Image (cartoon, rainbow, N blue to C red; front, top):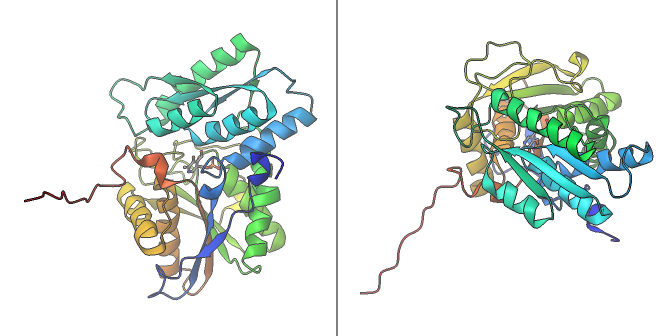
Length: 323
Ligand SMILES: Cc1ncc(COP(=O)(O)O)c(C=O)c1O
Protein backbone atom coordinates (compact mmCIF):
# COMPACT_ATOMS: atom_id res chain seq x y z
CA UNK A 1 0.00 0.00 0.00
CA UNK A 2 1.13 3.52 -0.75
CA UNK A 3 0.28 4.85 2.72
CA UNK A 4 -1.49 3.96 5.97
CA UNK A 5 -4.60 5.66 4.56
CA UNK A 6 -5.11 2.80 2.15
CA UNK A 7 -5.19 0.45 5.14
CA UNK A 8 -8.38 2.13 6.39
CA UNK A 9 -11.50 0.00 5.92
CA UNK A 10 -12.06 -3.51 4.60
CA UNK A 11 -12.04 -4.76 8.19
CA UNK A 12 -12.87 -8.42 8.83
CA UNK A 13 -16.23 -9.75 10.04
CA UNK A 14 -16.33 -12.47 12.71
CA UNK A 15 -19.24 -14.72 13.64
CA UNK A 16 -19.54 -14.56 17.46
CA UNK A 17 -20.57 -18.21 17.51
CA UNK A 18 -18.95 -18.95 20.87
CA UNK A 19 -21.05 -16.28 22.62
CA UNK A 20 -24.27 -17.30 20.79
CA UNK A 21 -23.74 -21.06 21.06
CA UNK A 22 -26.71 -21.57 23.40
CA UNK A 23 -29.02 -19.30 21.43
CA UNK A 24 -30.84 -19.42 18.14
CA UNK A 25 -29.45 -16.87 15.72
CA UNK A 26 -26.17 -15.25 14.73
CA UNK A 27 -24.25 -12.12 15.68
CA UNK A 28 -21.74 -10.88 13.10
CA UNK A 29 -19.13 -8.43 14.38
CA UNK A 30 -17.09 -6.11 12.15
CA UNK A 31 -13.68 -5.56 13.73
CA UNK A 32 -13.22 -1.82 13.33
CA UNK A 33 -10.37 -1.76 15.85
CA UNK A 34 -8.20 -3.20 13.09
CA UNK A 35 -8.10 0.18 11.35
CA UNK A 36 -4.72 1.99 11.69
CA UNK A 37 -6.03 4.27 14.48
CA UNK A 38 -7.60 1.28 16.29
CA UNK A 39 -11.17 2.53 15.75
CA UNK A 40 -13.96 2.94 13.21
CA UNK A 41 -13.44 6.70 13.25
CA UNK A 42 -10.50 6.49 10.83
CA UNK A 43 -13.17 6.11 8.17
CA UNK A 44 -15.01 9.42 8.69
CA UNK A 45 -11.69 11.19 9.32
CA UNK A 46 -10.41 10.10 5.90
CA UNK A 47 -13.69 10.80 4.08
CA UNK A 48 -14.21 14.25 5.63
CA UNK A 49 -10.68 15.37 4.68
CA UNK A 50 -10.96 13.97 1.15
CA UNK A 51 -14.39 15.58 0.64
CA UNK A 52 -13.11 18.94 1.98
CA UNK A 53 -10.11 18.84 -0.35
CA UNK A 54 -12.35 18.05 -3.32
CA UNK A 55 -14.70 20.93 -2.41
CA UNK A 56 -11.78 23.37 -2.02
CA UNK A 57 -12.54 23.86 1.70
CA UNK A 58 -9.14 22.60 2.86
CA UNK A 59 -5.94 24.05 1.39
CA UNK A 60 -2.32 22.91 1.77
CA UNK A 61 -0.80 24.22 4.99
CA UNK A 62 -4.16 24.90 6.62
CA UNK A 63 -4.93 23.72 10.16
CA UNK A 64 -7.53 21.01 10.76
CA UNK A 65 -9.35 21.22 14.12
CA UNK A 66 -11.85 18.83 15.70
CA UNK A 67 -13.77 18.19 18.88
CA UNK A 68 -13.21 14.55 19.73
CA UNK A 69 -13.59 11.89 22.40
CA UNK A 70 -10.27 10.67 21.03
CA UNK A 71 -11.05 8.25 18.26
CA UNK A 72 -12.05 10.78 15.58
CA UNK A 73 -8.99 12.81 16.59
CA UNK A 74 -6.73 9.78 16.23
CA UNK A 75 -8.16 9.15 12.75
CA UNK A 76 -7.64 12.80 11.80
CA UNK A 77 -4.11 12.77 13.25
CA UNK A 78 -3.27 9.84 10.96
CA UNK A 79 -4.87 11.43 7.90
CA UNK A 80 -3.19 14.80 8.61
CA UNK A 81 0.21 13.18 9.26
CA UNK A 82 0.10 11.42 5.88
CA UNK A 83 -1.30 14.40 3.96
CA UNK A 84 0.87 17.03 5.69
CA UNK A 85 -1.76 19.12 7.53
CA UNK A 86 -1.35 20.47 11.04
CA UNK A 87 -4.01 19.09 13.38
CA UNK A 88 -5.42 20.28 16.72
CA UNK A 89 -7.64 17.91 18.73
CA UNK A 90 -9.91 19.40 21.40
CA UNK A 91 -10.97 16.84 23.99
CA UNK A 92 -12.67 16.67 27.39
CA UNK A 93 -10.50 15.75 30.36
CA UNK A 94 -13.18 13.11 31.04
CA UNK A 95 -11.92 10.89 28.21
CA UNK A 96 -9.19 8.37 28.89
CA UNK A 97 -5.60 9.71 28.70
CA UNK A 98 -4.47 6.92 26.33
CA UNK A 99 -6.31 8.78 23.59
CA UNK A 100 -4.50 12.08 24.18
CA UNK A 101 -1.14 10.28 24.24
CA UNK A 102 -1.86 8.45 21.00
CA UNK A 103 -2.91 11.63 19.20
CA UNK A 104 0.19 13.45 20.45
CA UNK A 105 2.37 10.58 19.25
CA UNK A 106 0.79 10.96 15.81
CA UNK A 107 1.80 14.63 15.66
CA UNK A 108 -1.42 16.28 16.85
CA UNK A 109 -1.59 19.20 19.25
CA UNK A 110 -4.05 18.14 21.97
CA UNK A 111 -6.08 20.73 23.90
CA UNK A 112 -7.70 19.19 26.98
CA UNK A 113 -10.79 21.01 28.33
CA UNK A 114 -11.73 20.69 32.02
CA UNK A 115 -15.08 19.08 32.85
CA UNK A 116 -17.95 20.89 34.59
CA UNK A 117 -17.58 21.18 38.37
CA UNK A 118 -18.86 17.92 39.85
CA UNK A 119 -18.31 15.90 36.65
CA UNK A 120 -16.51 12.60 36.97
CA UNK A 121 -13.43 11.63 34.94
CA UNK A 122 -14.35 8.81 32.57
CA UNK A 123 -17.93 10.11 32.33
CA UNK A 124 -18.38 12.84 29.72
CA UNK A 125 -21.83 14.47 29.74
CA UNK A 126 -23.58 16.71 27.20
CA UNK A 127 -22.68 19.65 29.48
CA UNK A 128 -19.00 18.73 29.42
CA UNK A 129 -19.25 18.49 25.65
CA UNK A 130 -20.67 22.04 25.43
CA UNK A 131 -17.48 23.34 27.10
CA UNK A 132 -15.36 21.45 24.56
CA UNK A 133 -17.50 22.87 21.74
CA UNK A 134 -16.93 26.46 22.96
CA UNK A 135 -13.17 25.95 23.11
CA UNK A 136 -13.18 24.30 19.66
CA UNK A 137 -15.03 27.23 18.05
CA UNK A 138 -12.52 29.70 19.53
CA UNK A 139 -9.53 27.73 18.23
CA UNK A 140 -11.07 27.33 14.74
CA UNK A 141 -11.49 31.12 14.51
CA UNK A 142 -8.01 31.90 15.81
CA UNK A 143 -6.29 29.50 13.38
CA UNK A 144 -8.68 30.06 10.44
CA UNK A 145 -8.82 26.30 10.49
CA UNK A 146 -10.94 23.72 8.72
CA UNK A 147 -13.32 22.23 11.29
CA UNK A 148 -13.82 18.55 10.58
CA UNK A 149 -17.17 18.73 12.44
CA UNK A 150 -18.05 15.05 12.76
CA UNK A 151 -21.56 15.87 14.04
CA UNK A 152 -22.50 17.79 10.88
CA UNK A 153 -20.07 17.04 8.04
CA UNK A 154 -21.74 14.54 5.69
CA UNK A 155 -18.37 12.92 5.00
CA UNK A 156 -18.94 11.11 8.32
CA UNK A 157 -22.21 9.61 7.09
CA UNK A 158 -20.77 8.93 3.63
CA UNK A 159 -17.80 6.96 4.97
CA UNK A 160 -20.17 4.39 6.45
CA UNK A 161 -22.80 4.62 3.69
CA UNK A 162 -20.23 4.06 0.93
CA UNK A 163 -17.91 1.64 2.72
CA UNK A 164 -18.75 0.16 6.16
CA UNK A 165 -22.34 -0.81 5.27
CA UNK A 166 -21.69 -2.22 1.77
CA UNK A 167 -18.57 -4.10 3.00
CA UNK A 168 -20.61 -5.65 5.81
CA UNK A 169 -23.41 -6.76 3.45
CA UNK A 170 -20.94 -8.28 1.05
CA UNK A 171 -18.93 -10.05 3.79
CA UNK A 172 -22.10 -11.52 5.34
CA UNK A 173 -23.19 -12.96 1.99
CA UNK A 174 -26.09 -10.44 2.17
CA UNK A 175 -27.50 -12.34 5.16
CA UNK A 176 -27.82 -9.41 7.60
CA UNK A 177 -31.37 -9.11 8.96
CA UNK A 178 -30.83 -6.52 11.70
CA UNK A 179 -28.30 -3.98 12.92
CA UNK A 180 -27.95 -2.20 16.27
CA UNK A 181 -25.50 0.59 17.01
CA UNK A 182 -24.51 2.74 20.00
CA UNK A 183 -24.85 6.38 18.96
CA UNK A 184 -22.37 9.23 19.27
CA UNK A 185 -22.60 11.48 16.22
CA UNK A 186 -24.87 8.85 14.67
CA UNK A 187 -22.58 8.63 11.63
CA UNK A 188 -22.10 4.88 11.70
CA UNK A 189 -25.72 4.11 12.61
CA UNK A 190 -27.13 6.34 9.85
CA UNK A 191 -24.57 5.43 7.16
CA UNK A 192 -24.88 1.67 7.71
CA UNK A 193 -28.68 1.78 8.19
CA UNK A 194 -29.10 3.75 4.94
CA UNK A 195 -26.88 1.29 3.05
CA UNK A 196 -28.67 -1.73 4.55
CA UNK A 197 -32.13 -0.34 3.76
CA UNK A 198 -31.10 0.56 0.20
CA UNK A 199 -30.26 -3.11 -0.21
CA UNK A 200 -33.30 -4.43 1.66
CA UNK A 201 -35.78 -2.13 3.47
CA UNK A 202 -36.70 -5.13 5.67
CA UNK A 203 -33.34 -5.01 7.53
CA UNK A 204 -34.25 -3.75 10.99
CA UNK A 205 -32.07 -1.00 12.47
CA UNK A 206 -31.96 -0.18 16.18
CA UNK A 207 -30.51 2.84 17.98
CA UNK A 208 -28.58 1.96 21.16
CA UNK A 209 -28.31 4.52 24.00
CA UNK A 210 -27.30 4.39 27.67
CA UNK A 211 -30.05 3.89 30.25
CA UNK A 212 -30.85 7.36 31.64
CA UNK A 213 -29.49 9.18 28.57
CA UNK A 214 -31.82 7.90 25.85
CA UNK A 215 -32.56 11.25 24.23
CA UNK A 216 -33.28 9.93 20.72
CA UNK A 217 -35.82 7.51 22.19
CA UNK A 218 -37.51 10.55 23.76
CA UNK A 219 -36.87 9.34 27.31
CA UNK A 220 -36.30 11.70 30.25
CA UNK A 221 -32.57 12.33 30.81
CA UNK A 222 -31.96 11.12 34.36
CA UNK A 223 -28.31 10.11 34.09
CA UNK A 224 -26.33 12.12 31.51
CA UNK A 225 -23.02 10.87 32.91
CA UNK A 226 -21.99 7.32 32.14
CA UNK A 227 -18.86 5.33 31.33
CA UNK A 228 -19.71 4.28 27.77
CA UNK A 229 -17.16 6.57 26.10
CA UNK A 230 -17.65 7.79 22.54
CA UNK A 231 -21.38 8.44 22.59
CA UNK A 232 -24.61 8.68 24.59
CA UNK A 233 -24.45 12.46 24.76
CA UNK A 234 -28.22 12.95 25.41
CA UNK A 235 -28.70 14.83 22.13
CA UNK A 236 -32.36 14.54 20.99
CA UNK A 237 -31.60 15.57 17.39
CA UNK A 238 -28.64 14.44 15.28
CA UNK A 239 -27.95 15.69 11.75
CA UNK A 240 -27.52 12.27 10.16
CA UNK A 241 -30.08 10.17 12.03
CA UNK A 242 -33.36 10.13 10.06
CA UNK A 243 -36.47 8.60 11.71
CA UNK A 244 -37.18 6.46 8.63
CA UNK A 245 -34.02 4.44 9.31
CA UNK A 246 -34.98 3.62 12.92
CA UNK A 247 -37.01 0.49 13.67
CA UNK A 248 -36.56 0.65 17.42
CA UNK A 249 -34.62 1.91 20.43
CA UNK A 250 -32.64 -0.09 22.98
CA UNK A 251 -31.11 1.05 26.22
CA UNK A 252 -28.17 -0.60 27.93
CA UNK A 253 -26.64 -0.08 31.35
CA UNK A 254 -22.94 0.49 31.91
CA UNK A 255 -22.82 -2.84 33.69
CA UNK A 256 -24.27 -4.65 30.65
CA UNK A 257 -21.79 -2.89 28.33
CA UNK A 258 -18.86 -3.80 30.60
CA UNK A 259 -19.95 -7.42 31.08
CA UNK A 260 -20.37 -7.83 27.30
CA UNK A 261 -16.99 -6.22 26.51
CA UNK A 262 -15.39 -8.72 28.93
CA UNK A 263 -17.24 -11.63 27.28
CA UNK A 264 -15.97 -10.47 23.87
CA UNK A 265 -12.42 -10.62 25.21
CA UNK A 266 -12.63 -13.93 27.11
CA UNK A 267 -14.93 -15.93 24.85
CA UNK A 268 -14.11 -14.54 21.40
CA UNK A 269 -10.56 -13.19 21.81
CA UNK A 270 -11.82 -9.76 20.72
CA UNK A 271 -10.33 -6.96 22.84
CA UNK A 272 -12.64 -3.95 22.50
CA UNK A 273 -14.06 -0.99 24.42
CA UNK A 274 -17.22 -0.09 26.36
CA UNK A 275 -19.34 0.91 23.34
CA UNK A 276 -18.61 -2.36 21.52
CA UNK A 277 -19.85 -4.10 24.68
CA UNK A 278 -23.00 -1.95 24.49
CA UNK A 279 -23.57 -3.11 20.90
CA UNK A 280 -23.14 -6.76 21.89
CA UNK A 281 -25.44 -6.42 24.92
CA UNK A 282 -28.14 -4.91 22.70
CA UNK A 283 -27.73 -7.59 20.01
CA UNK A 284 -27.96 -10.39 22.61
CA UNK A 285 -31.16 -8.89 23.97
CA UNK A 286 -32.65 -8.76 20.45
CA UNK A 287 -31.69 -12.40 19.82
CA UNK A 288 -33.35 -13.42 23.09
CA UNK A 289 -36.56 -11.51 22.30
CA UNK A 290 -38.06 -10.23 19.06
CA UNK A 291 -35.25 -11.36 16.71
CA UNK A 292 -34.87 -15.04 17.73
CA UNK A 293 -33.08 -17.02 15.03
CA UNK A 294 -32.03 -13.97 13.00
CA UNK A 295 -28.64 -12.59 11.89
CA UNK A 296 -27.67 -9.34 13.61
CA UNK A 297 -24.77 -7.09 12.60
CA UNK A 298 -22.75 -5.02 15.07
CA UNK A 299 -19.60 -2.91 14.89
CA UNK A 300 -16.68 -3.47 17.23
CA UNK A 301 -15.88 0.22 17.49
CA UNK A 302 -12.44 0.45 19.04
CA UNK A 303 -9.64 -1.38 20.81
CA UNK A 304 -9.62 -2.35 24.47
CA UNK A 305 -6.12 -0.85 24.59
CA UNK A 306 -7.78 2.58 24.70
CA UNK A 307 -9.20 1.77 28.13
CA UNK A 308 -6.25 0.29 30.01
CA UNK A 309 -6.41 3.18 32.50
CA UNK A 310 -10.08 2.46 33.29
CA UNK A 311 -11.76 -0.22 35.38
CA UNK A 312 -12.97 -2.05 32.26
CA UNK A 313 -10.01 -4.38 32.64
CA UNK A 314 -9.37 -5.42 36.24
CA UNK A 315 -5.96 -6.87 36.95
CA UNK A 316 -6.03 -10.51 37.93
CA UNK A 317 -2.39 -11.37 38.43
CA UNK A 318 -0.70 -13.43 41.11
CA UNK A 319 2.58 -12.37 42.57
CA UNK A 320 5.23 -15.05 42.50
CA UNK A 321 7.26 -14.95 45.70
CA UNK A 322 10.39 -17.12 45.77
CA UNK A 323 10.76 -18.96 49.12
C1 LIG B 1 -15.60 4.16 20.93
C2 LIG B 1 -16.72 4.81 20.17
N1 LIG B 1 -17.91 4.20 20.15
C3 LIG B 1 -18.96 4.74 19.51
C4 LIG B 1 -18.86 5.96 18.85
C5 LIG B 1 -20.06 6.53 18.17
O1 LIG B 1 -19.96 6.51 16.76
P1 LIG B 1 -20.72 7.53 15.87
O2 LIG B 1 -20.11 8.89 16.10
O3 LIG B 1 -20.54 7.08 14.46
O4 LIG B 1 -22.16 7.52 16.28
C6 LIG B 1 -17.62 6.62 18.84
C7 LIG B 1 -17.49 7.91 18.18
O5 LIG B 1 -16.51 8.61 18.32
C8 LIG B 1 -16.52 6.03 19.51
O6 LIG B 1 -15.33 6.63 19.55
